[in-house]
Length: 372
Ligand SMILES: Nc1ncnc2c1ncn2[C@@H]1O[C@H](COP(=O)(O)OP(=O)(O)O)[C@@H](O)[C@H]1O
Ligand SMILES: [Mg+2]
Image (cartoon, rainbow, N blue to C red; front, side):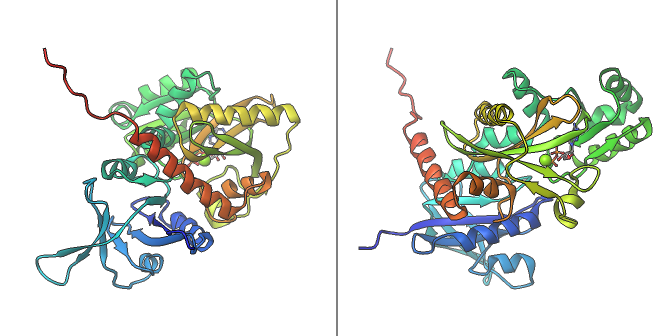
């Protein structure tokens, strides 16, 4: 007897600088999903934020095909995905399928930062990955650091500032930064990924330019002590009792792991496992789990570290709550090397999504005021 297939909504694309990266991840995930187990609906979000629906949604986002648009209502009594027909002026809406779980294969703004997770919560849907808080804290480099500090997880010295302060008096901001940090420094918009808007400054002129550039990309900017570092990454999987993969290392061929190195030249070397002694390997895996729990991540995250080449000190750099997920991306590759295949990983993520939903469902949501 065949079991009822699970209805999965695979959502990808979106209004993010990592739109294209998301399409690549989604293609890999879709190809690896067991179609005997899952009934997959593809939902592509265009760069302008339009939700498109069809078996060819991946194509639709890259090509010019006309696709019907889709809609997910925040109303939890309306569990279905709706199709919007624009053929008549009144725009008729038809429910097309219920969804048991959604898998946002999205990176960066709106997909990885808690925004779409908020919609899923409103709609009372099970979804893969972290909730609103975990996603938002993982995305926001300023808040993330504060949470790490509060949990005694080492982060490099940093100064956070704002576009407002930079605009008002950039010299004062620079004075505050140079009182705390030394060159080289890394200047980063608080809420972006894929190295967009990030620069390295070796002197005051570069710091000034970097602050102005980063402030174009976000209201808030973080400046960090730059070090000569090895980049070591760990994959974490699970909900309240997460597990860590072995660590891997990225050896960028460029000055740092910038957008070019990540996606254009793509010649950075992945070394799995990372060349660490057993103690270092254990320490880094344990720290990855600590950081994951500290931000209340769920499902999956890739935890990135910087290992000082001179001193051997280990610093947490960031958590990516929806890391690159093509079959050759670091996240699944680390699991592959730890003993979990790409398609098993997808199954597990969906199981964790359903488990997290069950966990949410036992939460008491209404309180009957006792009569006086
Ligand atoms: N403080 C630092 N010291 C040395 N290198 C850094 C530092 N911060 C970032 N980098 C380099 O810049 C890259 C991108 O920074 P990261 O914070 O990971 O941003 P993103 O979220 O865009 O990936 C890192 O992978 C690393 O190569
Ligand atoms: Mg990074």
